[in-house]
Length: 499
Image (cartoon, rainbow, N blue to C red; front, side, top):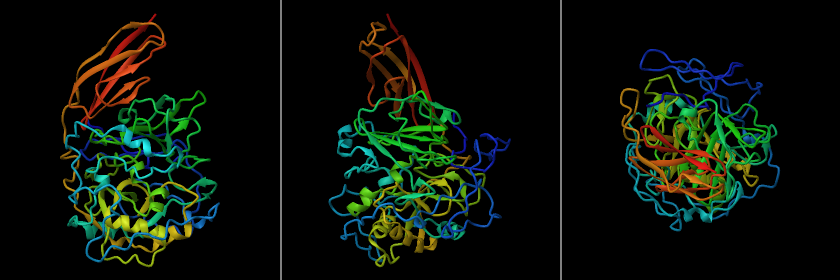
């Protein structure tokens, strides 16, 4: 059934445990507080001020730190001086011809669209480097038609654009950088792995909305806020280079036995952007993956960003547009942007005087824009930490006012009155080629299902493309097949006896 659960990143500072409340009306009001309240820290004086507290709606959230106030720990290296030129005042230019071709400049796809039945080969991910903050070497997550990759330079402006932009009233802000702030990395880190063993994940808040897959996440994997993440969102992002899957945790805590406890966890097909159910949250309030919207140093150094960028707003509407599938607000006011709204830097905004790193980012904002993905400080773009960022360069982005942006049309606005409903996948069979085996023997599990977007087999296998997988049980094991689509999830079990 559709869920109406708020996102981890909606934070009310309190010493109470996580709670949520549901009223009797169709417009549900949620209150979410953290396990422990972080110690108050005065934000840097350069951090943009939040709107007046008299502004209605969303729960407050913590304001990320200002990276520009902290000097880099190493001498930053700017990207090549051959940065993209500022798009002309008419239509922004496309990325260099050496990059993957852009999808049509139509409005973002509706999430109710049935995903393609075929996907590119997982070998597409083999070009990525390995390790923390590794270069993707030109690989761009998801298919070219995916909303994250759509060039929206020519998309029409939404009729509500002026009202939404006026209520934001803040300047752009790069919430990532080099070095550390208050001893912690600045930004949301990620890791690329190969052949990494699976760890079990136990969910303590949004288990019903989480993917029950084991994940290749080590206890040492860098998380948001490392090395002292405290009570922040504690995102953990891992890309599996061998199989082309993205794993994300929010509210993640490593355990002494090698497992993880997390508030929420999701699995994303880097080749096909598997559809998750409407109203399910993710590690973002919009129900979206975090990683595809990060600004990364490797792409800025290459001179172009070929995807939309993740951005937060302090107040959002209880609604979403594609590609989002979830909201986290109690306000129905049309002056607030719905989750998934696309913001584009106006074509005529002059970026010629900006330094190299900032200019690459601003060019991307003219071509691909930003997607409203979470509640947080206004106009805060997120990126991955890297000691090669030039914090002074990134700080110049604060010169760009919200009035330099516009909201582009994004199709149907979904609210509690019109969120699509439908049937969960129908698993018609789940079988094994042998139900009784010796320890460690290979067993092929096979299945058939109607209308599934993606499959997970737990334990041991994780996310699977196709309709079969080989497992090697060492003890008698009950395997569960999970089939998920844009409406809900179904499951079926089978037990393999080990003699």
